[in-house]
Image 1 (spheres, rainbow, N blue to C red):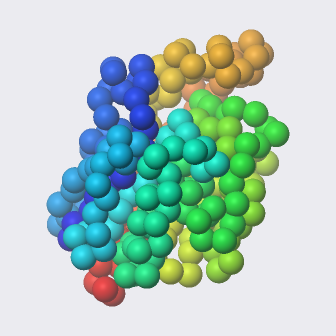
Image 2: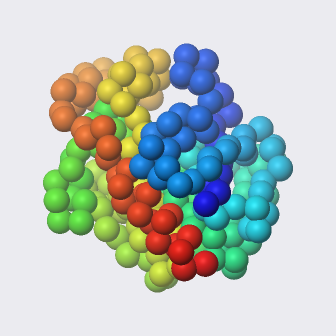
Length: 229
């Protein structure tokens, strides 16, 4: 099984400290899917995207860009997602990846009036209350046809989507850990939030977030659709 991570982050102070997003996502999931080989492409660096016969699944990462931004790589990414869907390649989206899948397949994503949300927050995840790290202002506004909301919260009504084709996505960041989330707040919080919002975000970091958040679900998702292809 071949899984390719689409790294959609241009680059910032966090990537300078932690390295590229592609390898970070791979480290999060690889031990839960030992039968897979992983690679990554820097989509935001205009890398050539794989063709459907070159991969069995893709993971679309977060990004500092929005689905509405005019970048050189946005339309090629959209075209590629359509090709992957037509070929039945399994797709998992995180944050921006969640938004671009929804926006491309009949829904919409846009800036939320709830503002920039980061730190740790609670979600109703398939009937269970779960804490997750997050960092976003854009949200899925309209659910695509055939997609089902499987996680939500007052601050994020469409927190996860399961599609009627091989696609799954989450607004939160299961690949983050506490230190990464803390550094994100320290580096970018002051320019994106008020003083009160910044303190509230820091206060949320004491919540327990599972180290294996969504690892088993994502591994089983790729495993199931690989066997069906």
